[in-house]
Length: 603
Image 1 (tube, rainbow, N blue to C red):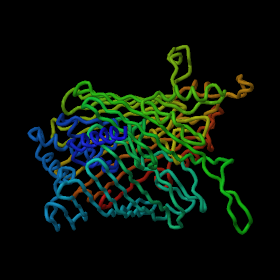
Image 2: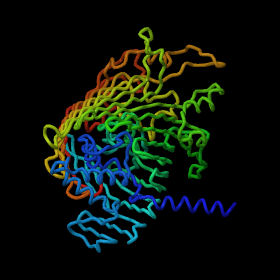
Image 3: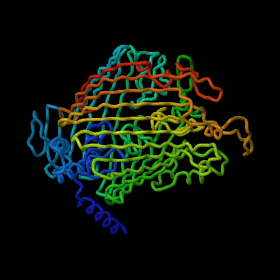
Image 4: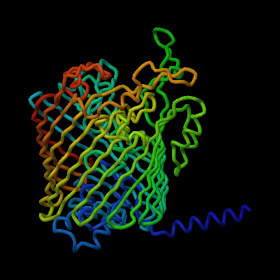
């Protein structure tokens, strides 16, 4: 029996090694916006076919897309050909070659040390081990009439690929914010603030990436460490990683998984057995920021024995099925569950499952509230070259009876639609538009430990429930690596309500309040409490791979609105300034003209 086992294992390993896998299965961070924009441009122009519903792409996927575009270079403009050659050089290791740079020391076969855009690359002569290391450095200066803010970051990243079936990667970025508007009792330009020496929640409605700040008396300071290990073959991969992911087709902000919350550790599975089908799954360990009063450390201090309480455990499982039946149509559907238990539940490690059904099996008979489950799907259509139409739907809870006109209740859902028109009739010019609406109680829950959040950041669209977003952008790429964009963005938030369950005694409902049924029966998008209009002129130039110069100037007008109606169950004072303080950092409140200039190695 042992001999047979060894024989079968040997055959499987040989089959894997003989596959023509040539690149690293390492994710390309969502922050590499210009690369993702170029790939989207190629797809919209009909040059390549891409699954745009699931990001990040792996380096092997990007290399394959670029090589596919290379075979159809007659369809590309002169600028696109230069961009393609540029990115093919960036993904040289994935193609078993060495990068070419202006200032470098190399033997052209096994190693390359470049001094302009510093990076060290190494590859054995048989291509079974590849490695690259590069530093990360950047700075932004942000200024307005209210003062200045200096953002600095530095770090490094390492990527390794072993025998074409094991990838290991990691990165560290240390980031700091400095400026008068960043000091204590002031708001950060992200979704957090410092109160004294402790971090407190700030529900700012913007599209900045979420972070967890450390205490700092000069402003804000945090570090971001990402990485993972992945075993892969031609048909898919399984990984343990800490990365940001985005599910749902969108270019401004997705309403399914936006990727803007701090990255979380997760086990992931991706299968691509054929060109027309892809399956994605992950099980993640979220951060609840909810104290568990039964779970604490005992600490010795000068005041005696003290208890240090720990946060409640919080997890998430999700899957996504993507189909491309024909070249011009792609649709994805999936479901997820956010749950809080003492330990991860084995049932939610089943990749192909309907998690709400599993939840009913494990909790319904107990007479307690179920966990928080969701369903979602996306549709992308490219009816003609140069045009992309897409939509994403997020279903928090759904009942057919609510579709009747006689039923005043609305299903807590979110929908997003958009278009991308580019490359015709003017080459390198594109126009994009996106519209999102989320109904009352979408993304929320009566149990704080299982809301659709991690580190107190929304995992869906940053506007949350009972809100809408309009985003328009026109962009032009005159030469290789240069991006000039003019965008308009409007964020509108309407009445915010507490998610309250009807009180129960002995399993029976006791009507002691409005409850969630009465809340979702209210008219959505009725009473405006916050609005922010922004116009932004943005310039980015990629001098070398991952070496950016950027500048932008923007105008915004952020306003709050008085709303003291008795039916408003908001968590904060229902005044114009109260809403404004809760949803917008002071640096951006009112009318502002803000300018930014910066550079970076890496991203």
